[in-house]
Length: 129
Image 1 (cartoon, rainbow, N blue to C red):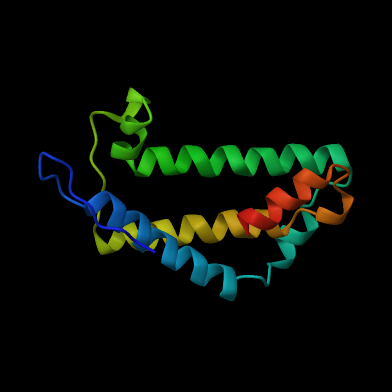
Image 2: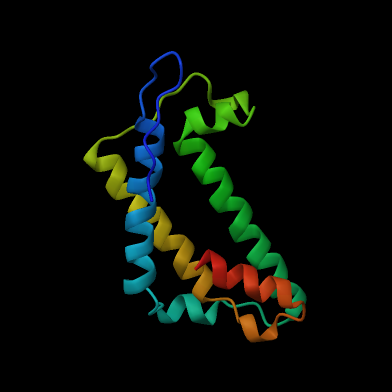
């Protein structure tokens, strides 16, 4: 649920709305994108250690992608690398973000979660999906 709130300076609620509108398409992708391309399934690492490393790399890449494409969010977290940018709310940027998210889901589908030894890794993968 998206909560609109204004601080004492009367700031704009766009960051919370942006989070809502980015989460909604991602949730839709989770419903539509469970079918992976055959190439992605063939690229799955064979070992549990390889699966864990691949899973952690997906998490890291996803996090960095969010920081790059939401520089205001990165700044609120203290990451000043993107202070020279602002978020792009154009239709083109939105479609590109959907494409990137689908790519992450495809990479995630290629990981054999049954081969993960640590239960937490399998659970994190399910939460990410």
